[in-house]
Length: 313
Image 1 (cartoon, one colour):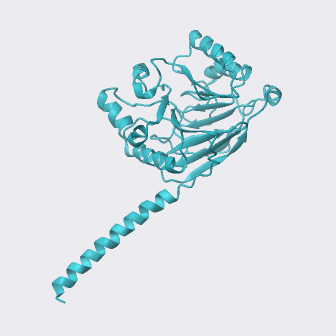
Image 2 (spheres, rainbow, N blue to C red):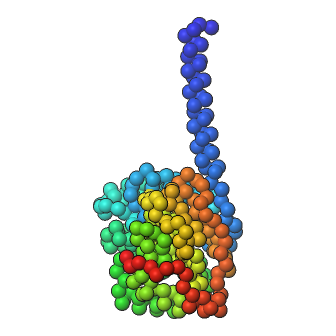
């Protein structure tokens, strides 16, 4: 064998080894994403992203993990917690910051349900793929016994509060889930809890038995300790990140994650909420099962206050 022939085979072997290594590494990333949820056939399964619309590499990494999780955990739709498009609202912005990163999910005919954030143009409510039906706030029922309430916390006026009370009173659902942008409980150093919004919304949540509240705005993940029988989650790290912003030792925090980007998976059965938070590196950063509080337990906890007086936005 000539030296030239040997050198060619050596280069080819090296390229093959490199290619195999890249494939193995890629498979390793996906294999590291272990789904911990029950994944029962009759439960409601959905995903959650917040502060996602940057068009950046971080958004695309989270989107890739979001889609990869669907192969193991077939969620039925995705809830968006605001700041869906940073910057412009031209056709190319919708394409780069939503349609392209989530193309496989859209092609699978899965719906996104959006709420508006402070960086969003209200006209996003007209964008068909956000499924807002032209409304700043709306409700939908993906299956009997579960109802979602999307709110616009940029402008919480009397009309919206009256609408919310009417919808909550009439829902008759076992699970009531509110989702919007600005958190009324938060340990974030940049923003923190929105006291004014809490004064407006919490009495209605308590009166009509809201079970789960999902928000964004803070560029991290935080699971709040139960507040008066309600479970609060912040998931605002789908494309933006504010490292070190979750206050250490906060009395509000059950779990915080501010060192990476993330999204959530959630599953509801009759009496329990199952959740898993996954980073852009396919690592589980929080997971667990929370039992839905019954009406009597909620009444007992209604007067309890956990954590310090919050700051206004």
